[in-house]
Structure formats: C-alpha cells, structure tokens
Image 1 (tube, rainbow, N blue to C red):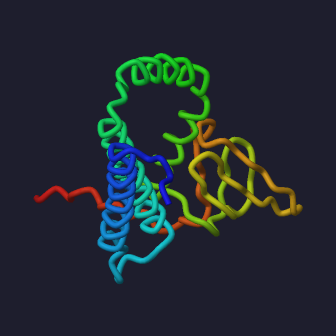
Image 2: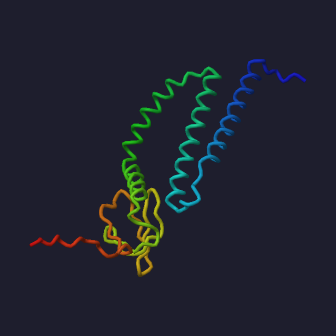
Image 3: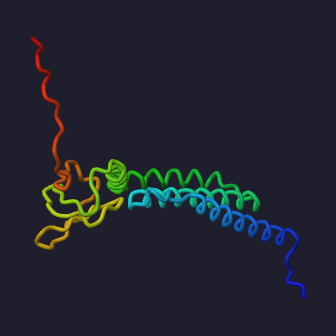
Length: 175
C-alpha cells in the first residue's frame, strides 16, 4: 500500500517527531532535577521553583520549535521581526500587568508579609489570604475581600510582626 509520501516528507516527519520527543525528555529530566530542598519547603520557595520550571520549559520548547523550523527549512527571521514589533506594542499596552508582576515578585522576595499576617495596605485592613504575582487578597474583619493589584502596593503596615525593638543604651561617660 503506497500512501504517496516521498522520502523527504517521511524523513522530516521522523526528525520533527524525534525533536519533540527529545524536548519532552529533556524538559522532564530538568524538571525532576529542580526541587525544593527538604528544609526549605514553604510557599515562597515552591512559588520560585514553579516559576523557574516554567521558564525552563518555555526555553526547551522554544529551542525545539527553532530546530523544527530549521529542519523544515522555514526562514523565521521575518516571523521574529514581526514578533518583536508585536511584542513591543503589547508591552506598552500591558504596562500595568508588568508592574503588578514585578510588584508581586518584590513582595515575595522581600518576605515582608506572609499569608495569615494582619496588615494594613492602601487603606485596607485585614488578614492576608493570598499573595499572587498580580494581586494580593486581604480579608477584612467584616468579611469583605479586598483585592489589591501588587503594582499599587506602596506602603505596608504589618501588625503581625510587632515585637520588641532592640536598642542599645547610650554609652556612659567614664569619669
């Protein structure tokens, strides 16, 4: 039974399949290597590990797509130029989204607040229920949920971290 495929088409299908399989295996191996150390398992570390894994997955599959286009002899230079222009216009339009994402990264990396803390942020007082990369959820005492974009967080008062302030006594003058 002849399906009418030429030798070149069959070879391209084989190489594309092999490239995708290789990308899948490399991605799985890299993801299995990147784990949260046993002593550091908390929400912040799991979030960072998840982000790193996702970035690596995108890179592995982007390289696989580039290899596939090269195998199929497709010139991607015009596609990349178009993507650059489109990316620039989307980036300008998505400025608030980018501000929220950067603000979320800063909130998580500084460890100034945590889930369960009693805080006052931008006039909202309550307990933090969720810290995401785009928003922060605060449950007020009356039960209302305040959702604050991370890009709007400028001042945080954390009532849960009250403690004694350690000060040194002024040095006494020797006589």
